[in-house]
Length: 368
Image (cartoon, rainbow, N blue to C red):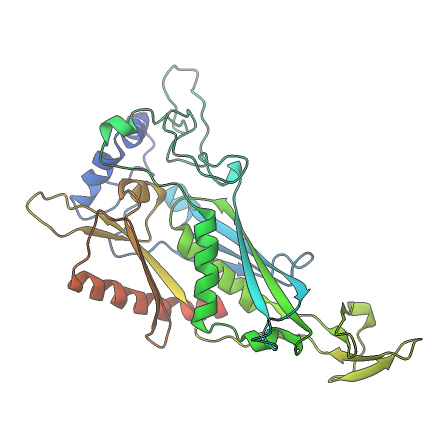
């Protein structure tokens, strides 16, 4: 069976119905022939596009990451991230360190399963439940579903009783990104310090899901790292007595470099600090692989699908593994989800090897 995204005859609505009502069998038609619905081999990731510095007015660093090509596959995963700055008080154990915080949000525009609060529902009785997040839910005048029609997935629980849909947990993604960036040495927290023991930068990385077609974990972490790479700390004036900080506007910045002492009308000493970009360490590059049971009943080897789509994630019932590596051939984190699948030693070695290759591939792309 070949990819259906390029089909233009009137029978595509039948394949759409098959995909919606029998997602496991639909995907199995492809995996049994060692291919995926979008034409990719099992070990191949979707093309990735990274755009930085596109939110210059409201953020000090920004990025947009797209997994996939809309014109080629019909859908893609796209997220944006923006870095904003707050001035906080450093902890007593780390008086010279700043900190980062991560916020991941979604809306109904992110996909048909998301509600107004950004939570993803797996209620299969909803008429908006489908795998084509960018398509309409209308029926053509001919009485048959048209090429762009979506179909309700009302019988998934019956047709695939062993397929348990897993909703996207944005809070879990937030915690994982925060933990991974802190432990990866990607940024030096001392560069976020302003006045030791008194003030430090708190970088808030706000990530918003534009479109969800699978593998939000990889897209969100890469987008957060790209936004941090685009971040430039502003020029500030520091009150040496109280530790108070004021961001200097561009109109007030003179041409002198280095540290400048100023005096206001109250003769309070200020020190001006020059803005700078962060010194980046090894980039933590994620690689997520969905784990599906084998099509062959006599085989115990699971099927590993690199960079899974939303359909592939659903059929895997949330069973996946995410490995985070860097160009130093270090495994920053190895995270497995789901309990109904097991990886052999050979498969773990293969996952790590693919992770190292992915790190070499994306390091220059993300850092610029």
